[in-house]
Length: 312
Image (cartoon, rainbow, N blue to C red):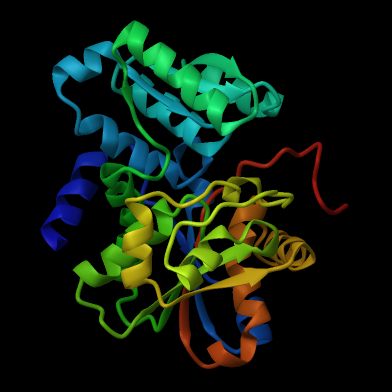
């Protein structure tokens, strides 16, 4: 597995940036931790998903690339796949719900992706995807439930662990599970048996938390959370990896997400989206259990609608 990650990192290096690892003395003093933030908000397309998108396309055959790629996404993966496809001269189709924010639709178009609108429902996006695949022969790449995507996402943690192999805890947000699954596999691959991989999830979209309790993949009836990147659910590839390799998932409330987002903006002077702030919110909420530990936090992205901020 270690060799697989090293090969993956080498494969995507021309397309995905090595992102900085930042510290914040003020936040460290407040929490009583050594904190290391892996800043994927500086990644191309504004989020960690560029890593998995590039790796997935690079693993396709020449024949598959000639017919293009397709995914359904209203957010970061749509932008990442469109940009990765542009770099690799591959046609890219993006099925997006008709209520997707204009800023995200515009970004996909700017990267050369062809948008096909659908109704904002799982049934609609899957039906439209199938229709495009039948017409074009494009290869479907799931935003998270794809092993090549998972391996690509895990390279963010790999870079962090190469710099700080003595971390006690590594925290990531959880949506579809690609990032945390890749993170857990990277920690295991590099033989770091003592590190705890922990997920953060909004209370309003806590399907992964409930899935670990029940032992089966749970769904959300509603996903009314500001962390829009975490509204998706686990898949049959991500869930077993998480179940076997993630210590626990901690839920946070909406006000805790907003407070953590504001803290990062104010103290670190960087732009992160609400989904990124979930990981820090976990640390703040469970502060006593992390005190004195070396903690790595993956800030997953920085794609924010500046006209719709949760604070002034």
